[in-house]
Length: 383
Image (cartoon, rainbow, N blue to C red; front, side):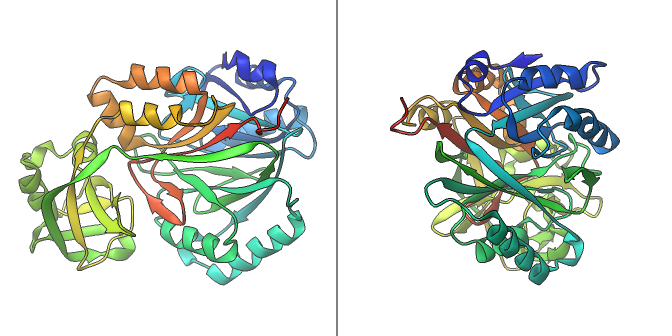
């Protein structure tokens, strides 16, 4: 078991505990790590399918009756020891400082936006936020359903005053099926929205390690509803991407996609439109929306460590915890550069916990290849 001793002893902020996914003592280990937190909310990252349901069934009888339990499968985990795989991370949010409610947004494929908005407004009304506390939303969504852009737009319209961030559930590097847990049920093809209130100070932190190059390409053929580019510059997309990056077609792997992202300029900033795979018909499958006529810029990977360290060091104080939604493509880039150990050290120092995603949501946008986090700090007037 791995637990942040300082976080557990302080009992002020969230507490993360991490255990081997296949261990026979998984539930007792997680419960021991959460002991004493009296959580209002527990997030579970790493388990999938039936295992996620069994984990909920094992934990819930031993947690407070009104504790909200939610979670999802992942493409990797971040716990007290840093990066991990084949593990489960449980994060407990003490009722002393947090209050939470969960809502399932169903039928992602059908996009019932009006129904979602009605549910979200009802959730907000029933939650009755305390204006003296900080309110935020967390979004967990099926990373293979391809509806994140519509989801964040809906949330932004329904709850414009609520900052929302989150991550798309993963499935390792298999991209076959993801699982989400809320209200005791494990499902796919849905999103889980959590409305959370705290008396702690919160700071949103985001970091992307890329910059634009002069190389551009136009999407000349695509299947937008499937997030697939068929042609770039009127050439088969995979072949043209290989030419632009100087790679051989056979060398197009997730690691190379992470090194050479495609960028879309919006709102005065460049955002990654990450590639998940080259398809058999020489197309490119993306993790974000794409349209015909879109101009994309080839990105260049920059320093993965220093800028991230500077961002966290700039916080007013060392966080009680940073809840993290970290793109799997960032992790692949770190692995290729041999930097996962150094990043794990930073995560341990700043008490970062969460999971590796198929995409990240913040500021009303769905992005890729980005670290999105929420830092919890003691309020300025804390004794």
